[in-house]
Image (cartoon, rainbow, N blue to C red):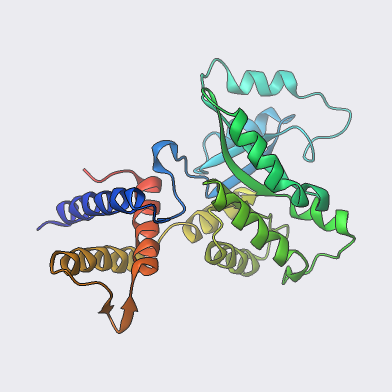
Length: 270
């Protein structure tokens, strides 16, 4: 079987498995693919700088934020520039909530409950975003390269986001010249369950989007695990050993997350 057909078959089986899990009320992963828009790199562009806005539209970032707050001088008005940049585009509005204070984090669960009951039609809840520097200031902490001062807050934000089926966007790496730190924080965020990361310079886009996508090795293993699971299901078997590891439903759900993340980022195979 060709590679594309193998991929298609795996996705069909993965889709069928997920529907079965949902009917059984088994929690089956972190992605909702019906309206999933990848936001691996969320690039901030000053809303007052038309040159940077024009340039940003040519960059390969999953998501661009026309910044009307921190990246703009207080005496600059940017509404007209933002309107011109967006033109006559028609978009379904997706709400991404920024958590940037201690009180905001404490109230986030209640906020999400209220917001999820209010959003419908053209306005949909899409994600949570962690404003790390504002949050650090709000609790009187000091930023460190290890970011241990915001570890608990980041973990809590991921849990809240995934509990409501939302994306979780990680903090900014402000040291622009330290690619090693960027890659380390990207890998850490991806391992924690974040679906993307805020970036403030074009040089941060590629490493970030690479880190928040499955590697070929991860994808290959996930596909083979899902296929192996289906073979054991047809034989009436439950847990099984795969490449030396005991596999049960949590492991299958993790593999499904990887397969579906790749599908969401790169689209369905032809």
